[in-house]
Image (cartoon, rainbow, N blue to C red; front, side):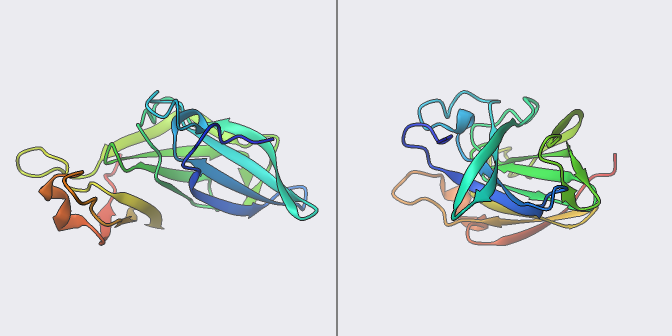
Length: 183
């Protein structure tokens, strides 16, 4: 079963985890909405794909819809805290991140039947803007929890030939650390 429709950009992030059934699973974050290049601009339809190994191939177990509260143009990376299922998902194009709670993760193991999201537990943050309210973290391509209160983000190279504003140059090809607000 192919979940990447048309000429999709593919997966942008993911994680692997042992299942409660003893199998090993991987979860891939689709870059485009609906896991599709054609429907990529249909904000708020992010997906993850749960897969397990069968023989020498990875097969799709199911697709998991990312909550619509993560209404992003694209999805650039994700990180999960295995101990508690807390997850962060980033968007490069929106210069934002969504922090939420996955369900179906118990004591560092994934239950493939229950894996999903608690739709009521989330926060959305935008990366800091310039003093004129313009995006300056233009190319966030990686994210990781440092601890419960901090995240680390990494930026890709600025797109050249006028595809991005000069403002993007200051934060390209960098590592950034952010303290999360107390809520």
